[in-house]
Amino acid sequence: MLDNRNQMNPYRILKLSELEPLQAEFVQFLSANGIDAAAWTKIQEEQQGQMDLLLSQFSRIVWEKVLGKVDLVEKLDGQILYMVKFGDDEALLIGIEFAEGAEEYLWQNIPDDHQINIGQNNIRCFSVIKSYSKSRAEELYFLIELGYQVSEKLDLFHDLAQQLGLALPESQQTKNEL
Image (cartoon, rainbow, N blue to C red):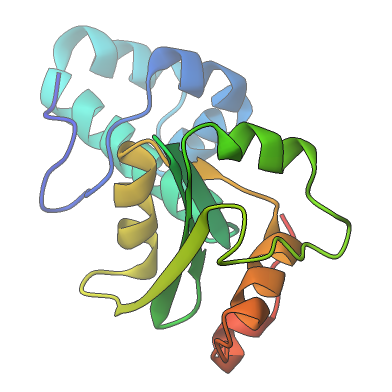
């Protein structure tokens, strides 16, 4: 099969288990490319390169559509929680470093207003703003491949940014609906 990533498609080809729920969309994609069921069967049997190219193109479309709807990803790595908010031109990372064992206590006891007493309870926060060197979707995809997960904790992220005194760029202030 085609290498998972190439110059035309920076994303990995979707796995069969990921393609199965998208069968209707894939059939529509094939139809839009002038390929009916009989032609697809023939391509699968006789034209491995063409099949790989079509799967790569479809995977790219799916990845870009899905990633276009994501605003925030997070990853708990040891005692550091990383939250990355994606704007139009840059990403803002907020990291929360906990003393050993404090992260479990904290997640069970976060107050509704998200005031987590940065600097107390052995909690340290930091932030970094990064302009994109690739497309927004490619930057986001890279983090997902590193183990980051899509997060819906935008309220927590914005409250942490406010506690840290970070002025969010305008492109970072709105939430895209999934």
